[in-house]
Amino acid sequence: MAMQILRGALALAFVAAFGLLTSGKATAQDRVWVQIEAHQSLAAAEQRVRAYSQLVENVNGFQATTGLYAVALGPYEPDLGQLVLQQLLAQGLIPRDAFIEDGDLYASQFFPVGANTLQGDAAAATEAAVEEGEAVQPATETPAVAVVEEEPEPVAIPDETPQQARQSEAQLTREERDQLQIALQWFGFYNGAIDGAFGPGTRASMQAYQESRGMELTGVLTTRQRAQLLNEYNGELAALGMQNMFDQRAGIQIDLPMAMVEFDSYNFPFAQYEEINDSGVRVMLISQPGDRATLFGLYEIMQTLEIVPLEGERERQGDSFLLTGQSSTLRSHTEARLVGGAVKGFTLIWEPSADEQIARVLPMMQASFQATDGALDPASVPEGLDESIDMVSGLTVRRPDMVRTGFFLDAQGTVLTTTEVAGQCEQILIDNAYDASVTFRDDALGIVVLRPNQALAPLGFAQFSEAPARLRSDIAVAGYPFGGALSSASTTFGRLADLRGVNGEETVQRLDVATADTEAGGPVLDQTGTVIGMVLPGTVEGRTLPEEVTLALRSDQLVPVLREAGVGVTIAQSAGAMNRENLSREAADISVRVSCWN
Image 1 (tube, rainbow, N blue to C red):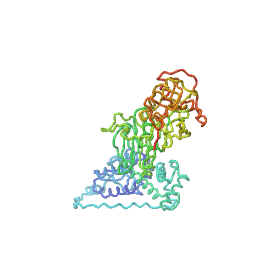
Image 2 (cartoon, rainbow, N blue to C red; image 1 turned 120 degrees about the vertical axis):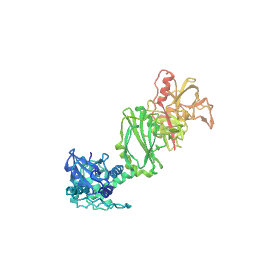
Image 3 (cartoon, rainbow, N blue to C red; image 1 turned 45 degrees about the vertical axis):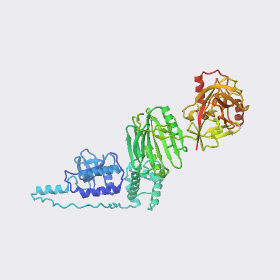
Image 4 (cartoon, one colour; image 1 turned 90 degrees about the vertical axis):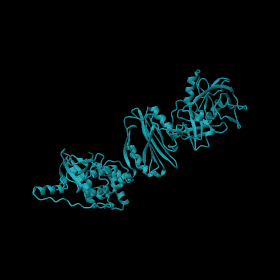
């Protein structure tokens, strides 16, 4: 059994005191103990039992028939023993493997010295009287009286001199020393490694703790101060209700703040925990079968949800991703990774009022997260689920104020699109995922150049024609119709009807092809896959064009402007015509959805 730190001194003191009031009523055959620790060596057991005895009464040390040395509280009547065990386990004050022991395994008692609680005083006296032939008087029955529970008096721990504090500190186990560092770290006094080594950093944090509590500044915590620190720490943990939860259906084990959330439902790919006690906190465990494509698809979907505010870190690696979001009313942290043929992770959502608590909860969730076998079944959907286009797994999808199309200009992800997305957006996103900034704008032509705030690696980028396209030749237009609802660009085929605009503009060409508003900014390609223009919005001087007419900038007019602005362009080399399938693939590879958010 793992050795445990001294925790919950006051709670244990109350339990021990309560046990003393009741244990005398039980016979030797009708008593139990709460065994909390066991050790292989007598020295280790004596150290632990003496440490507990400084905090509480009714602590015993027994040598077991198995050869181990046990630390136990009691004795209690059986019902009370079970109640004590359940309460202490629920509060996290004793090890999870603590259990009720009836005493049969205890061979002898080594603490308190000279004590023998294995044989009750009443039973021993009765046996002695029988042996001496004395009459045993029956116990006088007394009427039941109401017991008024009072707050237990704190058990006083003698204070120590600095020298005594160092001596008692030297008896601490590695686990106990780690726990002190963890508690100091929890309260913000320590930011070093949890290594059990009390070097200058730990000493400084101890002194900072002493200063904050009005104690003498020695840099060495006394036994009383260590108990106070750990009691404060465990009190904070109890307020959060941190419990290690194992969700077998999701195949996830993780510490969760169960005083702030409770399980609500499975809604593939999430196991959803909703807030309780007005905590403003929610948790979603992520679990679904899949591969890297599944992981990346989830990465894209999560960023469309309202629970992931736009401002925050976005990081996608080979087999994992991280998404954070923050706004004036909401925070969220999502992380997921590919593990054994499944995507596993979690999302933590909270209101700003819980920032301080979450700063403590999140690291514990991250440190405890384990992916086990199994994943949620795609059929795990609650009855009556809203499956409208504005919902994903019962969660509201965030919609942009505007969607347009753009296309990549180079291998770093620079994008050309229409000026419609500039000037009226607090945030411009490429593919709803990557922040972008305007680096060049030409209102006369109606174009903007966007540079992503992180380097991208597009599947392809535009190769332009420096010459006018051939009149009445076949062309293809790539874009995002249907309000940008599709996950990839679609291609529409038509003809080049005129090399000038409806008013005779030399910079514009007219296409016989129907396009949607959201396709403005998309590339126009000839049959070789060369970009010969960019689709313009569907109005001219405030008038809407006929459905079958689309205007596009001419590439021979566009290329010189981009070069003069210092924007790199690539000129196409001679190539043969493509079939429609390959041309559609080429167009989709260079096209991108551009969204405007406020």
